[in-house]
Image 1 (cartoon, rainbow, N blue to C red):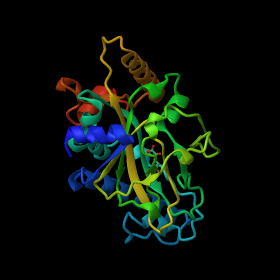
Image 2 (cartoon, protein in one colour):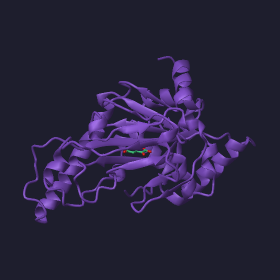
Image 3 (cartoon, protein in one colour):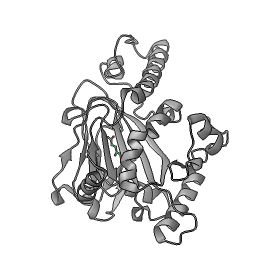
Length: 304
Ligand SMILES: O=C(O)CCC(=O)C(=O)O
């Protein structure tokens, strides 16, 4: 699809799907890291006597679920620390992702360290915070975490499936056109997940984002989305990443001013995880590699 067609579709729907955007060469190292992390967890649980079998032959798609056939353990659903690694950095900065973002955000793009590496466990699992994520706008999260009215900024989420996803294993759903409704009221529920104050599905027709590994789902901070139960025995793995246009330093435009405040505040709250440019007409501002990024933007304070 041309850049203009991508932008037109995104502006109409509030989201786009980009099939086959990310190659195995980019995805494979990150998946390998996850396999290793799940393997380490399995060995720890085995040593602690919490499980009977480390399921060493199980693939990433099922291993966590296989470890705990009765779903009684409180297995982790967030693996975000892994995102602070070269393997996941390569997904966040891969040209295929940035080309899509350039079509939607323009040529100056900043990566926000607002990322998740998530697994949605089968619905029967205890302590599964990702079991059912209710309808929300990402701006509802950003606004509740900062003083800045971030819904006036254009922040994009890139949702990268690491396994094929559909209605059975808890894919994302979106409400096309909901990005034009403006910011809606919402609050965190008892599990810390955002929930909208009003029933939103009456206002639109939800669509499932059926994706294969390598595809991308890209949506705005105002687009309503949710994910439902994983009704399979497999584990739904994904990464989600966030970006915004880099504000012009000298500009007095309101969005540039808000974005500068937001980035300053974001940097303060996250400390080590300072947002950084991933694409620019001035390539000197963009880290050329993971180690360049660590040196220039993490000030040597990386301690995942
Ligand atoms: O991955 C999910 O199930 C939900 C993700 C989500 O809400 C997000 O990426 O903003």
